[in-house]
Image 1: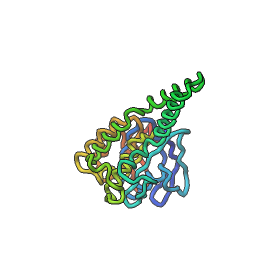
Image 2: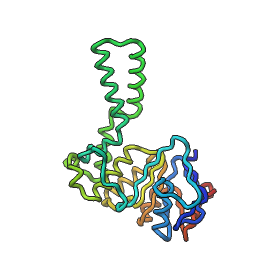
Image 3: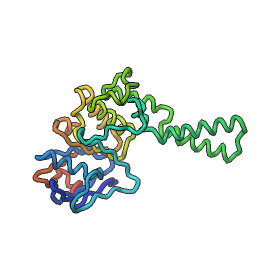
Image 4: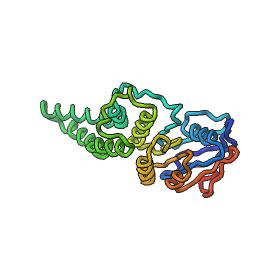
Length: 243
């Protein structure tokens, strides 16, 4: 199933770039100009507009984008601590959890009509299917993999370095599990252990990934397809990915 179609993209750094990204693709983008690679990721993510051409996503497809450190917004809404920030990945799940608790209290106090009980059971099923009872385990797994020790989880965001904030944003993206994960320089802020953990995680990721960066060996180890950008033009070994 095609997630994203890229058609005849032109920018200062790109020339008539066309391709598709399908469900489950793991793509390494390698080129002779880092600015060209960065521009293509930004255009696909919707963070930059092409001068001509277009990018179309299938209805309902969720994209997650992590750009370079110098472009990173350093705020996380109302979150005060590192753990608060990663909890943002489960905001919808936590709203559903609060609704379930309210329904449970209502049913305990006032009893429940068949309609309310049926609604509660449907909501409970959605909560269970979305991993509502294990999101704390998932958070711990991702934070540990990205090199955050439990003693750091309650640290104020205000004292974290830009590199640590970048890792927090990466954690949020991994926990949100978008259909397409787009990351510029995924290993720059990671030590070797965290980079190895991320490679393993992305290889097993059920969604699609589009990655670029300086560590070509790491990229091609994760990817099953490589896109090459040369003089702003895209070539792909697998013609299935080239329109």
